Length: 269
Image 1 (cartoon, rainbow, N blue to C red):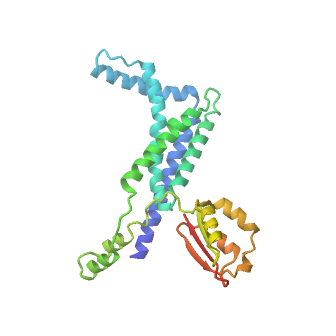
Image 2 (cartoon, rainbow, N blue to C red):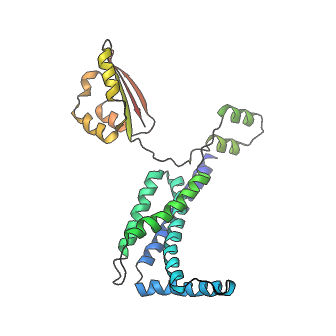
Image 3 (tube, rainbow, N blue to C red):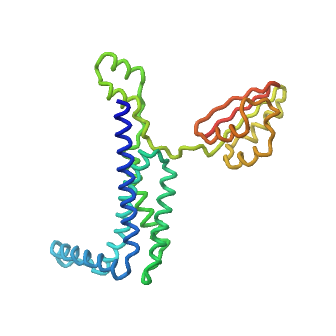
């Protein structure tokens, strides 16, 4: 069953990535069209929609120019909405974090707008990047996150009990036990460090240290500062390189008791 699940997961990874790449290529190809070509596509669509509106709503106040402008901007939103939906599945099967997907989405939108500088009669727009392109991306990706990215609380003992009684199949038991393995997290890596240092018999110093380290330390600051500290003399059970590698993982908690009874408590968040 494990081998079958691995094959299924690999298929999902490939399919999700292919769809994401195809949508991205389509978006970029549309940006490389000349102004006349792009305008011609949206103009024909605008005329068709306007005729339908006029046949249904007689004497309406919708102008062809206004409808054309709405369709051109709406096309940006729809394109990136679909890309955002595609990226939800790509993130799920490729273990990407929400933060990483949002960064990729913004980079894609920026690159897309810059490509519009290539045709002589088109130009990039910062407003389009954030309002229509990246905005549509957030809508598509965000809707699926809200609908399907829910963490389920599963009691392991209860699932195993039902499995032993034959009330659920092994496949369903596996799904229940590992239902959260595909949950997309905001970030897969730690970005802050919570530090506490306790020195025996130094109440005043401990209070000062507690105040100094009350606010979590951004990891990039800690990684820079630790370069100048010789931790070998503190009888640590790991090297400096191992500590730097370890603290990048989210949810790590380490209690260090030195031979001289000093305590260092490190938590990554």
